[in-house]
Image (cartoon, rainbow, N blue to C red; front, side, top):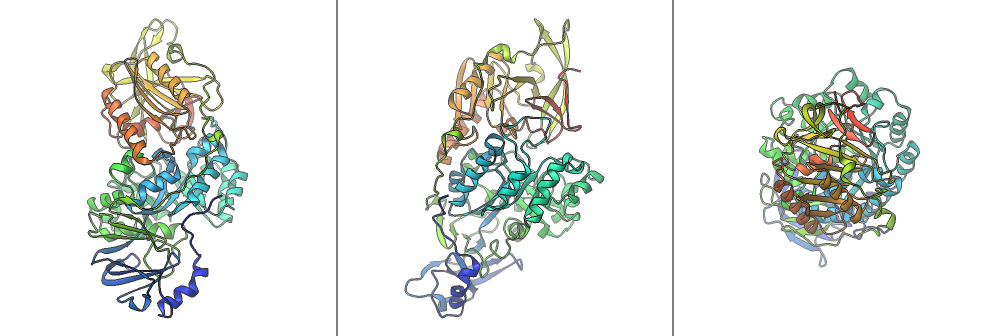
Length: 601
């Protein structure tokens, strides 16, 4: 594994020099002078302070660092600007950005994100432990801090879906020895934990014995005994809350409530009232993104966007900053290493002229300036992705319109079909029904009712299997289809459309290009986002991927779609651990009961 081009000494190794600099016996590598020190430990702003840095760590913070300055010391004049810690994302999936770790880092560093806690369970479903290792290794090469949580659930719901690979308890035990592994990724199989499933309990115990953090994922409104049983399993946080009651329940049980603002998940405003109105201790709350696609990163920002949003929702700016820095570091046991501007910590510093609007004017990571005024100033090294990571779409045959025809019960003129109902800006779906016409023995979508077809195409083993169903909420019109090999979490291929021929064309195109997203209308492809690595990511720069993603979003609108960030909704239609109704390679899944269900009533 290639190491980061920003080597960092441990605090123990750096301590002798840090002490000598703070005492005035040696000179610092860098001094940031004359800024307003935002202290997230004491929640106060202290004007007229300096920060001295050496070996990538902070040696001194005080009103005068002149005793730390020598002839070779770099001096940055803060000019009265606020000095805040680099921002931390407490829960996220790099693959959701459609970028590799290197390109994701390149996209978010100018926005002030210097620490990420990532769960690569998307690639785990496609390439198994080997894929996780590839993500981990590229993450370790970056000039900022990317910690990896070992994926816990591939498949996320055993018996309800088939993945390309399965993650075992032995895999988890092996990964816990890797240098960049910070804990266990979100434990999505909450029914398994509650039922005492041996595999789930083994993964939990391995992580606990390693002294590392277990990520939570409790996507259920039941806050009674089931929730208590889940918490007893050791999950230390949860990002699936959507209401104030969810946030309160989690912190009362000793969890950290992670409030997310991603490209399509807007769960901060509904939960932050637990702090702003109910007055709960904010140190038990963390801000995160969960899923941000490249367009959001390029056009809107990353954790700076989340902090601004929290402030706009009524949160005190200093509390919002705590929720994106020290709270996150403390949660993962890294409070003594990062998350604040205090001696010994990694020198991850942002200079900004406004705490509420949060313009990111200079970003320092490990004591070196990495971005200024939105421009990246460093290289983010790439891993050498092997061919097996680029050849993951296996259809087994050329698909035809007949593969997407939905046979109705014999003799039926109409059918009552179960329909996946998309909910704008939220991860859960609704389990709906619709009366649909039958033509020549096949059930038809209904544009007037907003009902389109959905198909899941198996793409890991080349079985040629297609599972068909119906979905509503996108607003598609005319002859169209959109296909994607990003289909959380098993990452087969999801195709949504109004016309079987268009759906077959979309599926076949994804097979040709090795994965990605394609939009078809009236017999022509009108947008394409190639994602050749595991069918999930591109190693092209974020700006290029975002441009293609913008074209994809525009193409979806051309097809009649009106939803905000509808692609994110599309990509979650196979996520069989979030209620209410989903689709998998085994059929329709009733997630309220965690069982397969028929298409027709």
